[in-house]
Length: 263
Image (tube, rainbow, N blue to C red; front, side, top):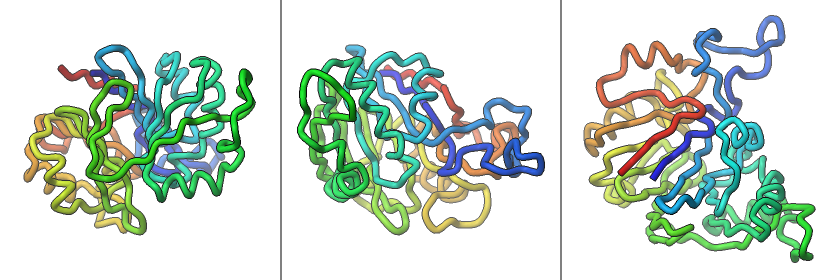
């Protein structure tokens, strides 16, 4: 299995819009470090038989897929319905054209309801053979369920994202937990024994209402003991070089385009 981190930024990306000269607000991050340039959080899972599963359709999806040289997608998973994870949904129509078919897509009931409300045109009956809009073959996820998606068994578990839940994913010894501030006993049980964990870590500062900070990630890592922890959904105080210099062994910041290989 191979996982490509398409984007590891927070909801506003980095640099954020603004800055003294209008070229962007970098916060505490060094603009000369290319790994501080972050698009919105999303990944692609490539299975052992070369199927590709896209997790979330970020607003930066077109640029992310072309930068990562990913030519096609075979299935889509939505973790939740916040705009930074779904606003690129219209790009799915091009992925439809490449695949030549509606794409199987997976989300929980709450997320499908939000997607129907915001992208109603994407759920109208398909009129073959053209794809003038996204066309998805809708599948419902129940947290706690294991599903075969593009030949990969994926365990889904609920995460607390502050005001709403999000879905975490486990694929064998690898897990992905974007947009999470708390994990209950069921989520921790689903994560038990993982070796590689890509996890939300928005800030090095005090507790955040909807996202984990470094102290929280360190506490989870001490309990779960994965071999490797990779931070994602990082905010403007998370400078790449500073994190590399100060995080304990086995914990590292991710970066856009990072590839994680697993046996």
